[in-house]
Image (cartoon, rainbow, N blue to C red; front, side):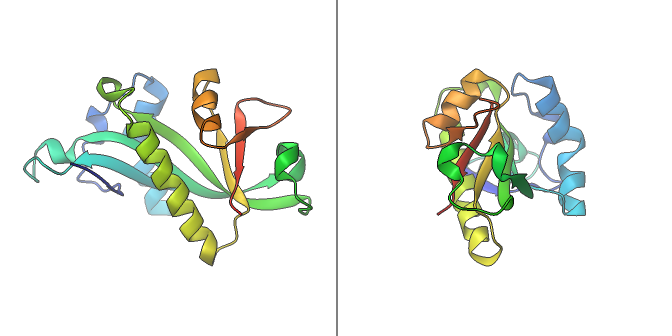
Length: 164
């Protein structure tokens, strides 16, 4: 069974391979530092069926990071501009990645659903108008679009989904 949990030092970050070296390197070298400094929060998918210590459970199957941010209203697609002020708070979804051996098996959908749920829960306590994501390529942008994210006019790789 797959479980989603906050990244800790017990997870095997250096063994993760999503097929993108910058994403692999960010997880291995930066994610935990950013989490410790309060810059972002990273959540990982792990297999909870294996033995707990020194095992498959510590192996990361996928991950994503969330951070608070602001965007200018001009950066949003027209559908997301609902009489907002010039600058609005958003939740930034960053670096969603899946182990290369698990692509196409639905783990990305599970991670995205969890990211949206956590973002909405946080927005109940701290203002956030929506979720903003910078897709790494056109394929990733299409993935986000199938879940209700709208592309921004100036950059089709920037996508936004209103929270409310």
